[in-house]
Image (cartoon, rainbow, N blue to C red; front, side, top):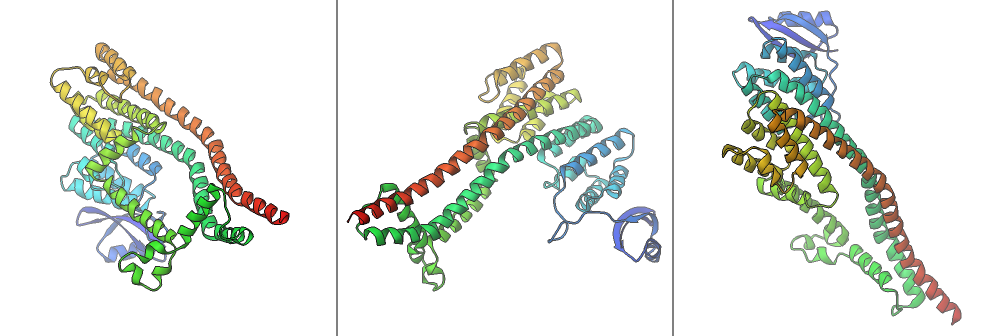
Amino acid sequence: MKFFYKALKDGKAITGHGEAKNKEAFAANLKKQGLHPLVIKVDKAKGGGFFGPSKKIKLSDLVIFTRQLSTMISAGVPLARSLSALQADSESLYLREVVAGITHEVEGGAPLGDAFAKYPNVFSEVYVNMVRAGENGGILDEILKRLATQVEQDASIRKKIKSAMMYPIVILSVTVLAFFGIMLVIVPKLGAILTSLGGPNAKLPIYTQYMLDVSQFCVSSSVIRHIPLIGMIPGLNKLPNLFFILGLGVVAGIYFRRYIKTPRGKFWFHGMLLRLPIFKTIILKIAIARFSRTFASLMSSGVSVLDALAVTGGAIGNKVIEKELKDAAQAVRNGKQLSEPLSESKHFPPIVSQMLAVGEETGQTDTVLLKVADFYEEEVGTMIDGLAAIIEPVMIIFLGGAVGLIAASVMGPIASLSKNIGSS
C-alpha cells in the first residue's frame, strides 16, 4: 500500500510518500529513519496515465486550493503552515508536489507571488499578478477569494466554448479524412473507369477534370522526387505527394505555434483575432468582462488605480488590449481619469467608459464595473449558445454540399459517357 505522511525531524515538519504492507509497518519504518510521524494516511492521489503523474491540475482542484488558502490566511494561520496543511489534504499528486515546492520557497523568504510564478503551467500570469497585488496591498485573503470566483467563471466560459466547438471540429475532421480517402483511393479508380469509357481524349466537365487532376497530384510522387536528399532515398521517393503536404503542414504548424509564443508573434496573433468576424465580438466581450471584474476586485480591495491597471492588463489575455491599458495608465499618470482614455479606445465600447465615468463620479467604480462584468459575461454565454445552434446546420450543409459536388463530378460524366456508348 502507498501512504502519505507528515512527520517531525529535528523539530522540523516534513512530508513525503512511501509504501508498506500496512499502516503499522509504515510507521515503524519512519521511526527507524529517525522520524516522528504526525499524520499517516493511505495515499489516494490520482496518477497521470501512461507517462507517470499528470503535470496538469484540474480547475476544480485549483479553486478548492485557492478558497482554502484564503480561509486559512483570513483566520490568521501563518502562510507556511497553511500551505503545509493544504499539501497534506490534497488528493492531486502533482498539486502536492507544487505546493511542496511553493512551501519551500516561502520558508526561504520568497514572496508567495514569486513562488507561484515558478509553476506557470498551474498558475496563470493573471493569478500570479493578482496574488502579488494582494501581497502588496495586505489583502491577500480577499484577493484569493475573488481569484477563486474568477477561476470558476473562466472555467464556465471555457467549457461553453469547448462544447460549442466540439461538433464542428468533429465534422471538419471527418470531412478532411474522407476527402483524403476519396482522393487517394476512390477517385483514381473512377478516373480509370472514365478513361475506359470515353478514351484518353474524352471531354469531361471542368469540375470533374479538376478533381481528377488534384487526385493525380496527391497520389503521384512528383514533388518528393525533386527534394534534395529525400528524393534519393529509395523508399521515400515513392511516397505520394499527399504525405509531403501533410508533413509540410505539421512543420508549418509547429513553427507557427513557436512564433505566436514570442512577444512580437503574440501581439500580431492577438491583433488578427480581433479582426476575425464573429469571433472578434466574443473575444472582445470576454476581455471586457475579465477587465471589469479584475479591475473592480482590485479597486474594492484598496489597490491603487495604476497598480490595478498593471495587473489587469496581464489578466485580459490579449496583448493588443493590454497595450491600450498601458497607454491608459500613462494618461492616468498625467492626471486624467481612466474613463477619458478608454473613451478613445478602438476596442472598449462606449458603454464601458460611460459606466466607468459614472463610477468615478459617485465613488463606486468597483460596483459599477461588476455590473458591467455580469452583463458581458451573460452576453458571452448567449452568443456561444447561439453559435452552437447555428454551427450544426451550417456544417451539415457544408458536408452535404461537398458530397454532392463529388457525386456530380463522378456520376455526371459516367452517365453522359454511357449514353454516348449506348447510342453508338
